[in-house]
Length: 208
Image 1 (cartoon, rainbow, N blue to C red):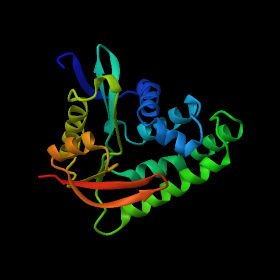
Image 2: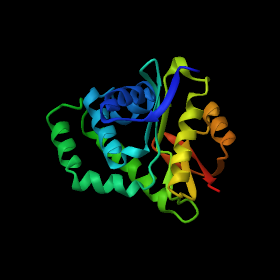
Image 3: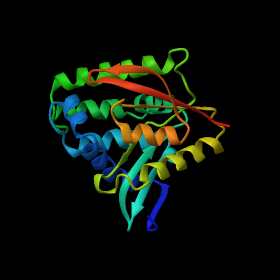
């Protein structure tokens, strides 16, 4: 795709990224929230992810429109620290209580338990890494055209420039197109983890 460019995301891109995430992972979002939440919910999550490490956020654009994104943080602890020290948790709680997210109490329990499961997996000996592919998505009409690969290559260049030695990602085992992309980029499956929706395949890539 000659007219596609991959570059660092900006703060102004967050709403479009959040909308693309919701579109791409609609079933998962509904599973976690019980309903499709109001746009503010996903925008607040991705605002935190972006602010924690702006240089780790990449977007693919085609004629100016965002058709894909990738978040590739070097250190996930920055995200959790910022969530606490930056007042995000308090703001989220207030917006949830005042109905600005559009879902009730039960989804909060599911989300918290799933995050605990992922954090536990991330620090388990043999499953830890010093950099992550946190989230990748491509608009449906542009899939299969090399967009995800281009985003991943930008993320890997970022890791290499910052001397990350081991990269981790998780993917659903039945997401065959994504698994194939990751394998072609040198990722190797190494164990699994689970959340309330089922199994995730854990994949690693060592950086030369």
